[in-house]
Every structure is written in C-alpha cells, then in structure tokens.
Length: 114
Length: 114
Image 1: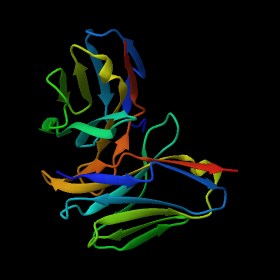
Image 2 (image 1 turned 135 degrees about the vertical axis):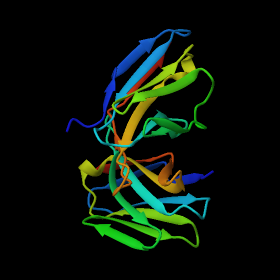
Image 3 (image 1 turned 30 degrees about the horizontal axis):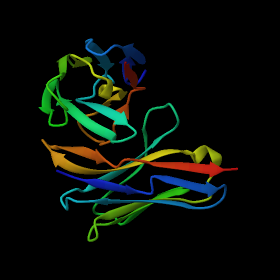
C-alpha cells in the first residue's frame, strides 16, 4: 500500500494566484481530513469528509478556501486567491470507517505564497 | 469545541534520561487520546493512544497516563535515544457524526542530546 498520496510536495506561488492541493487517500478508507500546520497555530483541522461527503468545514479559515471530494479516491483543497499568510504545510489524512481511530497522514504539501 | 493545551513547547534532555510531555483538555466528553510523532520533514505518525476507560498504557519505552477527573494526560518516554528527537502532538477526540475527531495540541519539540 502506497499510503496517502499528496501532490504537489512543494508549491511556490504569488499572492493572488489560485492554488490546488491534491490528495489520494488509502484505498478503502472512509474518512478524509485536511490539516494545516504552522509554527504559530500547530496542526489545525480544516475540513473532513465521510464517504465523500463534507461533514465539518468549521475549520476552513475563509471563503477563499474550498475543498471537494468527487470520489472515494481523490480530494482537492483550493485556495483562491492565495495570500502570504496561507503559507504552511498542508496535510491530508485518511482513516478507515471502523476498527481503528488511527489517522494516516500523507507527506504534506509545503505551500509558500510570495 | 475542544481545546487542548500542550506543555512544554520545547524539551531538551540527555540520552538515557526520561521525558514527560503534558496535555490538558477542556471538554469532559472527550474519550480518545492519541499521540503522534513527527520527525523533521516527515508526516505525523501515531505512536500510542489511550481511551477513557484506561488510566495507563505502556508500549516498551513509551507510556501514556490519563486523569479524566483533572482532564489531563501525559506521555512518558524512558531511556531516551537520539532517534526519539521529533515533535510530539497530543490530541483529545470527541465523537462527532459517529466518529472520533481529534483536536491537536500545538506540539512539543523533543531534542535528545547524545
């Protein structure tokens, strides 16, 4: 199993540009989580999905952020327009629906907005 | 919602010493408490967890204790080794939509000096 896959691993963009981060969860996992990690705020939950349905997006900082999960094997987190304060590492994590509460994190996307 | 405080933010020890990281949480309904280890530049990975019906759990050199009355839990690492150097995150999990959703502490950077 390749684990959770995220792309790109690094993204450098200019303020105002649209950024799309991608995630492929572990096959068979029912839950998918998007996190943002910064030195100031630690690891913050942005949104999570259960069976492709968004359950709680209260952590999404602003309307500039949106997330979709069109099918069980793919999710995107989009920032439009991007701002320098969005610079962070964005992690995707997935989890089976039953028998364990362990979350499996992807390698992360390091986003730098200039 | 849940609020998790984690201390210290940085912990420096000599190889062979013990290390203790402490977390407090606010919502008495939380009943699942995982700990994740994040090595430099890598993804967070679960190292140990505890549920509210257990007061202590051990796995080789690491142990976690939970005091539900006081709403705090701790990670103990004995006989520390340089490879224990990492950032450690605690989390307190509430049931939401039928599943445990964690709120993470801000992390403790553990440095083990050879």
